[in-house]
Picture (cartoon, rainbow, N blue to C red):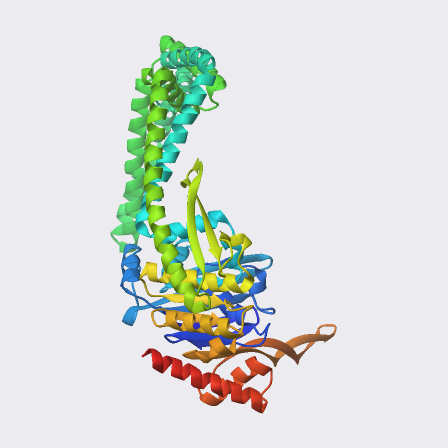
Length: 586
């Protein structure tokens, strides 16, 4: 249940806090007053699409925060996502929009934890369901009608749809493989010849280390300059450790420095740290001298090895030019070549084997579709009865509805075409919903359908209706009001309406209106001079009508557009009838 909505710098809203309650929550106001902005905010905070117009002019950041009280099914889902609830089963969804130049960024949080839009969209399914009259256009499409039937059928149908989807993908994969094999058998043999030649060539090279070429080049450089390296290593040894020309080596000079510092340290202990550094340097120089001496002694000219290295380098460079450019890419290519070669030479890939696989996959798909069709027929029968039951109280006592399932071309959703057939009046031939229902009838049909889904889902949450009662009046409007109130006994219902009959039954009534306010704005009057002057801005304000007088006045406005005595009297009668309706249902 949505308990609190906080909006800041969103569209025409500067700052707004709304506290919703259980039952039927109604938003009323003049056309263009900003009611849709409230619904937009709920949509956006739960992962809806955003654009620049949602940032209030003159600001660069908007934020929306929605607080929900959740049930056990959602708690289980949150545990799976490793998201903790706040105190008393509270869930807070927060979204922040930031405009930087032409770039619009958004961040979503659930109970303070940063999440992505995909996760927020999954959460949305547990929290709210938004229904608008514009959805009636979608209802005309048979594809959408099939989707609605599947959703109504629940988990059993949805699980079988996954079976059908997997079977379809496997069937099409075998079909593609078979067709490819039939069309390219000659190409396959030609390709095998090429692969065999390349495979043998690369096998003979015996590649294993992607760094081999670099290592060989380093070894070749060393073997090509053995004499120079011997001479230089000996010279280095002379400089560091032992000089044949009678000059002191670095080790000798450091030893002298060590002796001097040792004498100094007897008189000043501050010299100790310097002495330690010199001792360390002397040790390292001695070790370096010994190491370079060993290195020079170990160097040997090896013309045969040098020839081998150069030949191997030339071979690897040629292979890289042909399959590379790098040795690692050659190795990767060889791995792919092996896989392709195995696929093309696999004895199981014969045409007869592929034809058998194709037939088996097709039979599995057919069986999965048959099971899905049975489940859809069962769900359609239930929907026929329940939808008629839901429509009758909506001034459609003689309505006929049939969810017809007929064969269609196989696809990833099965082999069924679903079409809603509808006859609203006695004596009229049953026809597809898309060619029969009027605007008012479609509104009632959509509301009844939503009632069917609400019962099928068997879960609590918030149902949002955006002017679902548009285009109706009188008895039909009263029937819609009663249906909305009936839904609100199980679910929290949030409804935007222009119908006083609907508003009269509200448990919580909010009036939305636009107001003009003054805001401080900087205005440049001269060069390098600015003044803070008042600026007239339009903002959306929402007032909760929590007493009889304010509700009566708002209903009068909805009824007659003014607060004349006759409108007030009619509004009072609506409130009396609404209270009587509530008491009669208890």
